[in-house]
Image 1 (cartoon, rainbow, N blue to C red):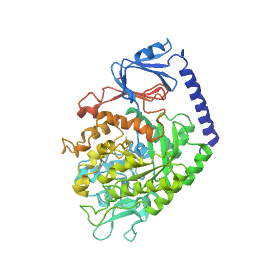
Image 2: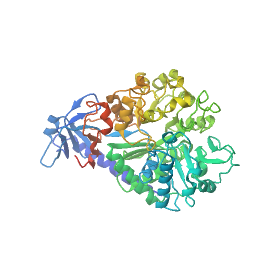
Image 3: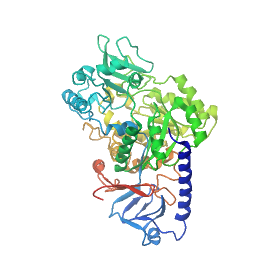
Image 4: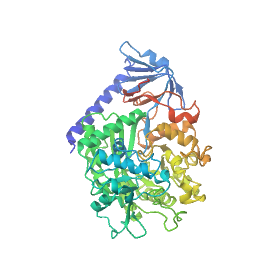
Length: 558
């Protein structure tokens, strides 16, 4: 358990240090600790510059003249050699612990056929026999469209329980041993908000969806504190390599990531910043924590809550007003009953907590927007910054509600070029009007923020920007862009990964821009994303990542 006094003491000490730095930094004669010169600087404010001066953890000067005036012999000078500097990226939506764990697990996402899938499972089982195999993720659409079954993998995993997630994290593929340990048989009923996929004889195939995953989760042995923290450190290194200074972690299921991050924070800086959400159902526990300890600091913050209205499009559990085109027997699944969601959101909002809710289908989005409007009526107006995670399939008439209600659309562009290969099969042409509607949302005046949903999609802002700008599906079938009227510009995308994400996390007064007084979180890229052929965006490399004024990643080519 975290030593509360130690954590509070650390936070108080850091706050005092920050105040000292601020006073020192803005003293007229304070020398720069670090100067980034000779580059192209995108400030996030619509103004370009060419140099950045840093004292402690803050930016204190922008522009060659201002920077040069404060350089002393002690100043570390970094010659950018024409490279592109900008506010470091923030990712609005990661499953950071799960993503960190996948870095050491087999790649099942890029297999070409069933044989290769089975071979990679077999290799992973042989590498760590008798240990649960929990990843990596798979996508049946990349191997012919047929859902995998336990029969695929039973022969190569007789003594190893397997529960590997679909790429959207809304389904597991389990082998027979995992089903046995979970107590899932033909007589096990589907839990509320979940589906146990069955064959023609009524036997479980091995695929379990949404709340049915909980039956498996409860029998998976937890990782040790040491394993969790080591995994998170690997994830941090991965994020820094891609120019991220902060990630949001909206976790609707447990506190594992948050608790592990709290332990790391108690030991010092976490190198990256985290805004961690915990399950909405635990709002009273979070309210008590905020009352006792505040909301953390700029390395690790809390006070946010996450819930799910529905599931995913890939699993056919996203909730729509009309039935699925390719399965007219279902409209999707309510992961959390609407009455329970309403009760918890009203109470948590009354306690002053920050709320975000996952909604994929058009009915799910309408439901949560209706609920948010009701909460404002019941609890009164204030700066809530309600969020909808994903907001993937929205009825056209619903789009203006985001701006009108000041609800943040927290979207993940890579999903558009991934799901765009097959979405029409699920919901038909008509419902594509309003699907991944980044352009329409921005044009309506809504606050739109970008992220990845890592490990569902790569933890890569450049790949996300590429997806938002070109919308070319990953199968190459849409060279002019899938639903091209929803394309946005590179600068709009950069804004969504920086300025907008700072706003979504209540940090717009200190993050997301290159400006005096802001935290020195800076990414240096080898090319200006706004000046190159957009097809080259995924190949733009991060040369340096600064977080809190300290260079925490440096590429070999920098």
